[in-house]
Length: 173
Image 1 (cartoon, rainbow, N blue to C red):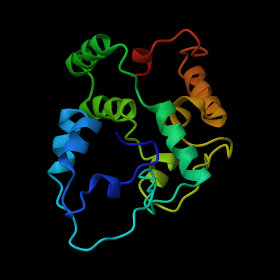
Image 2 (image 1 turned 180 degrees about the vertical axis):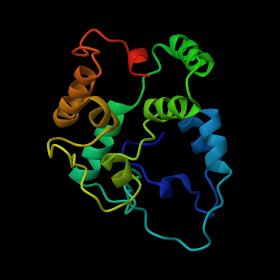
Image 3 (image 1 turned 135 degrees about the horizontal axis):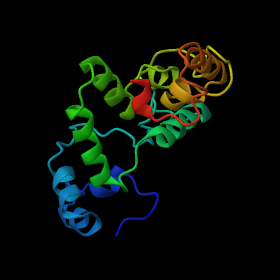
């Protein structure tokens, strides 16, 4: 059995191939099959830990923070059936396609916010450029930014919609 700090090297047999018996007892069948399907390099290189949430492979507090923001923004699967019916409703209602696509992108965290751009390797600050407070996640860009909230409320008042406190999302569309 593998220990907590085991490396890839511990999965390689003395003959240079995969130790398939150890792999099969250490991993579930799908993972074992995936590992065994990987070709091994002809030359031996030292093992190293890699943080796959950063392009450099190095863990930094910044990359951990960005990953944490992404986790907070990602949708949960607890209400999967409700989500499926919500998506069907979104595509069924008679609103412009660009609005549907925007809502879909926002719900999937595919809006080019500073956090998302930074996560794609661009060298930008994750802070909100409008209010300069907190990281600009999808939620912050659409609802959480205090300055944008003031703009939204002034538009609602100008259009005689009210303060916006008792409105539903469909009222904005």
